[in-house]
Length: 343
Image (cartoon, rainbow, N blue to C red; front, side):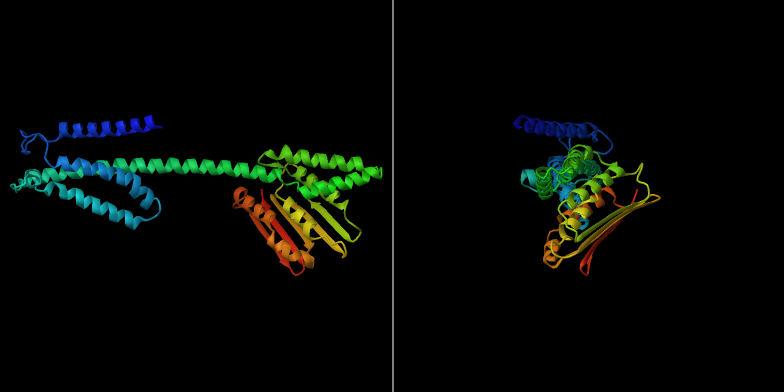
């Protein structure tokens, strides 16, 4: 780290030295038609180059990142204007008084004009160089941040997908299957196989950006079947699919939070309840609707813990930014979720 910083400092010093020598070589000499004062470089160079160096680092490291990049254009214009006035004033300084302590004669108007022109050209060169480097650096930084955000989004999405089998659902299902096993029910192997298929799908198959819609529907059907194990005759569940899901793909487990919420908040142990789930496919559009009751003791809890729906909204904004419409709201004692998705 220390060697890298030292190398960077040496590179900057060498660059400024090369720039200074380049200007000296190509600047007008005393034997030219326009007479320049001795020494062989104008005395104002001794002040101009440190000022240009300071402007270079201020423009690159302060003005553009902290003002222009943050949309503070007025502050940036003011900073550049003040720096320009300071640089233009440099050729007019009385260097005899500055270095020797006594006033000197004013430079010839032609010499002064050349000095001002050289100053402006050098200032413009430094301004373009520092601005270009700062803009390129900010662009690369923005691209790097964008890639980091995309990577973070990918990790977040994968974690979200892998957490779709709710632990409570898993434990309850295993307990129900255990009960069926104890009772030696013929349905126990069937439910074990369904649960295994669901876990396999979540932990391995949904790592892709999109999954076949047929598999999503099968996953929901198996989830509903396993949920019915703990339901009584007071709960009615309706799940219908209209249209053909073949050759259609969708973001994995995008629809499941609506179904999970319906079973989480739309079931009562003492009152009749109904959950209605429908999926309709027409042309290149998918319409998904979930309707369930909200019982009094679950209303406040549902309104305060909507993490699943918030994740769905975020995923829709990321994956289908201009091709979806979602409405999820409580109407009276029922909760309605309507999603329209264009493939």
